[in-house]
Image (tube, rainbow, N blue to C red; front, side):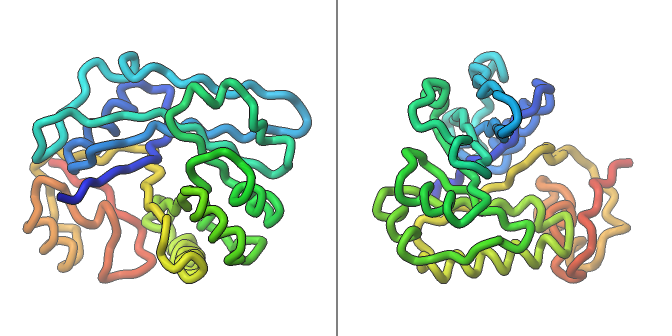
Amino acid sequence: MAVFMDLNLVFSADRSHLQSMIETAAHLGFSTVAVNYVFEPSTKKKQEIPSPVPISELIGQLPVVQGRSRPIRVLNRLTVVISDVSHFRPTAPEYRCFDLLAVQPTTEKLFHAACMLYDIDIICITVTEKLPFFFKRAPIYGAIDRGLVFEISYAAAIRDSTMRRYTIANALCLMESCKGKNVILSSAAVKALELRGPYDITNLCSVCRTQTLKNPSLGPAEAFYCMQKPGRQPAEFYTP
């Protein structure tokens, strides 16, 4: 039986908002999610690495996964955006507070170091713009041999046509370099989908209207993307 996970739900200080995202993920059938704390150090001043909020404080009772009899599993994740070697501290005790550790390198040198040296779980690939370097197979195979995975987030691709093109192009380059191995998709969701009805679907295109009628519990299909009109902005959920 297939198991679905989303290892990138962006942390929000609004507890009700974060709880809504977790409940939505459980409703969509995700068995595991990770609350992602993004940390972008600055070379000008020292910054404190964020501490994860205990899951019991984020949500009182974990929702049961749709179609399963057990509650959703929630992990804590830290993503460090590194643009300088000093931004990643391999021995930082704060890293141990998280279940998953990821880095988002911004240069080829840092990408190589993440693949070959850093003790991490995930390497985030920036797919919303043209990458400043090419993927080389040596570091990618090194990362695969070490059990690391490369992450592609699709949130931007369903919001903007330009970002969609970059996402597809960068994802294809990565898949060709690693031959499809050790690549995961995540949402990078910052807002929960509204799964309540009924909906007014009169403003949807014919394709999205058909898909919505097939799966009314998921809401309008156009909230995810519109296959009939590339480049079209995702529609809002329509409620009476």
